[in-house]
Figure (cartoon, rainbow, N blue to C red):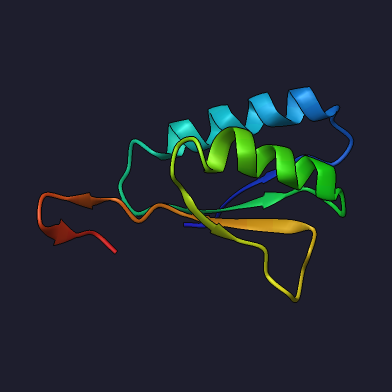
Length: 84
């Protein structure tokens, strides 16, 4: 299932709060994948990376074909069995 959140038009602080809530809700399921649509705001991307993705240790990348998104992947495993 494709999970995504679109942050266009939101103030940065609201966008960060909504992104954190979105990812924490998804994280109850191991192995989720999600797209965060930020537009071309590198400041917002940096804030999301520093305040959410790095803190919660989510794997992420910004695809070269769409610099206005962040792809997030949950690489956690359950015991010794990988869900991915």
